[in-house]
Length: 330
Image (cartoon, rainbow, N blue to C red; front, side):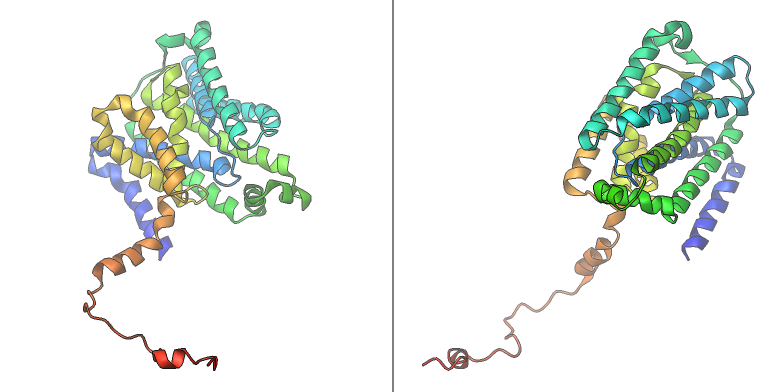
């Protein structure tokens, strides 16, 4: 049944551009980018338990690499490939020192790396154009962008699906639950964590190149800023980290809220992402996806008929005279 529903949704998304609805086309492209960013983060943060607050660094590296090479005349597909490879190489280089850290120390170090990248791109103006930003070649690309973004979303969800059903996924889950015990049982912890980071970075780098192609302009705050750094973490945690559908739910929820409410209060975006992470961590650690089993129970209480308000004697209760002598105490 679930496969039929997923198939129908995919068919609908494939034929949607035929209806010629530019606003909804744009909305879906942005949604696909959100989903891809959240799912790629969750490949490391959700399945190994390493909350990577620096995930957006791979995104930014892919974005700038794509933009610079695309402007130099490199073919589109090679520019995408170069951005992806740059993110992967960067992930391999930082994995060895960063995975010596755990918990909050890992998260803080990763976030500091993002701020360092933002500072570097601001100051290397001869290459990145600094705060003036990098503008790339324009063109009418709405339909190709739509199908490419949809393809990337299907790809990252498929990769997540197969990982969760593989030995790699089992090893990642063991690291998430108890890394020391996993190591004692022979799991190659460093290699598994590096593999997870590389897969995560590859999709983030590819997404960065797509983002540059879509916006035709980037600057350091757009790809390394605090707001966008918090975004994938907030979406994954809100929807449910470590579950394939979780980041999708979080991305849909946050984008709808943005479109309906937050566009009037743009300056509150960063605070809102931080508030989502805080509230989910305190009150809903499993995310929205884990509320599913609770909803039928809540509905049953809401729809149940009220019982008559009168005292009813509980069954099989002995009279008070019998209960005092139940142990034959005089």
